[in-house]
Length: 378
Image (tube, rainbow, N blue to C red; front, top):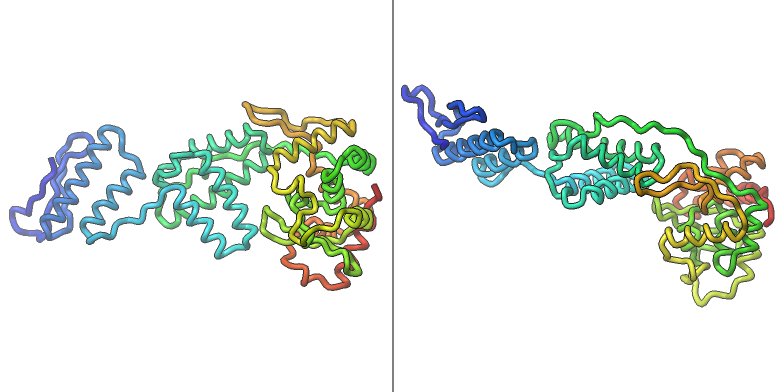
């Protein structure tokens, strides 16, 4: 049992804590406190820590909690600031939003959300309780779901930045990601559709799916961004018709010129009740998984052969060479084959962020129109 004593010879004004360490040896240390009640609180906390160490239950996270309790008692309510895993990662992403672009912050937010979901209830633990084993298990879990090694390695690097920040601020003693090695990345190239295959898809598609395929092929944008287009995003009255895509992944806006084939399709659609109406109402706001399955069925109907570039692992999913995203690759590849400079290709695909339509001059749009014109008619 812990107790406090004063120096018998009166050489020190401080109280001494008397307790037994994790081996049972009697310890006597100065508390550097002159108030007996506060010194006793410290002595009891030291004894509690040693008792937990003797049982093998003392961890870095628990040590920090005990120190916080002591400081809170001794300093009149101010203890160490203790973060749970979810609190720290949320705090870290908020810091990124202040110091980086929203696009960069969104990448960090996506990686941290995945890790918190993987931890489940353990996300409420002290951030110092996370070990290298947790990070390695998360890495392996993500890989087992069919994600590319490059994607998984990026997830770990995002988490490493978060824990490195926690280490710099003294909330953890080590970065648990530091010991994690990257997965070996064997590049697997996604496939592209030929113009003939895109034509087959359009012929076999019905209703909104036909428009969705054409929008993907002639704009190079992602599945959800195409499926959720509204009439207010389409400008068919200007001299150079354009579409403004609201990119869900980054929150950015991308403006692209409408190919005349796609323009004719849009003009053939019924007049909408309002500008807020979706261009493809039967597909809008549906989960990506459902839309992807419908597109796979369309490929089968068009007799387009599929191949697997990464096999299913541990109950995860396999990755196919062709998907709706392949229309994006086809768009970029055909532009490159048509001699369109990389700068323009990046503008059209959105790899270089453009915030609003207004930043494009008429000359810019003419250049983009000339680029899109190299795409074949389907």
